[in-house]
Amino acid sequence: MADRDRDTRDPRQIHVHTQHTGLHGPKSGGPSGPSASQVVALVTLLPVSGTLLFLAGLTLVGSAIGLAVAAPLFLLFSPVLIPAALLLALAVTGFLSSGAFGLTGLSSLSRVVGYLRQAGRRMPDDLDYAKRRVADMAAFAGQKTKDVGQTIESKARESGTHTTGHTATAGRT
Image (cartoon, rainbow, N blue to C red; front, side, top):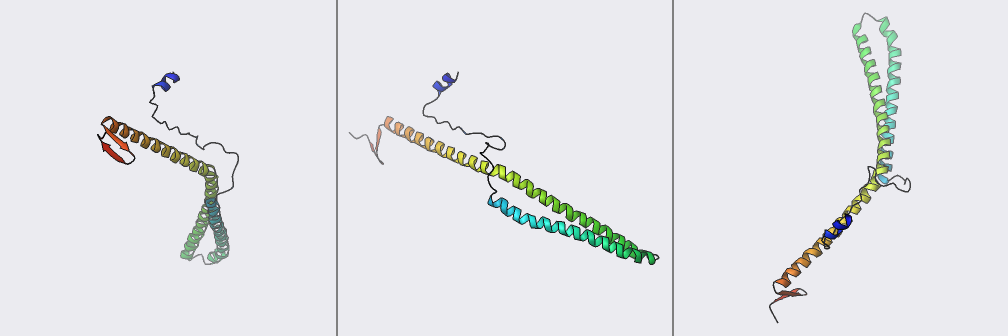
């Protein structure tokens, strides 16, 4: 069956075969070092996430100290309900912002780790695949151009026009 398909093909046709790789591309010999973009991402996001985690801790400690100091004062002056409501609102705000800073810092660290793992696996394979595709298409375009030139030359010969270099002479003997 394969022999019959091979015999019926036009010998002037070029067939471009590309290598299809799996989801993560072909397996390489081993892990390579981090790229420059990975190092920049790590250097940029580590201080940001560290700062957010520090702010989360600082806000939590400040809220706890403020609650501990202000609670006895508000108990002594319990007839005044507005300051108690204000204290409660400030305490809730402090605890919520502390949690938000903490979650943001942890999610930033998680994002950095995921980015570094993903980029380390995928980037070299994507570049190699793109280079192979460009080379395949260049070879295909070159062959197609050559075929079209040969077709034009053969049609010119059939019609009695001969080409010599870049000048064409029609019907001269």
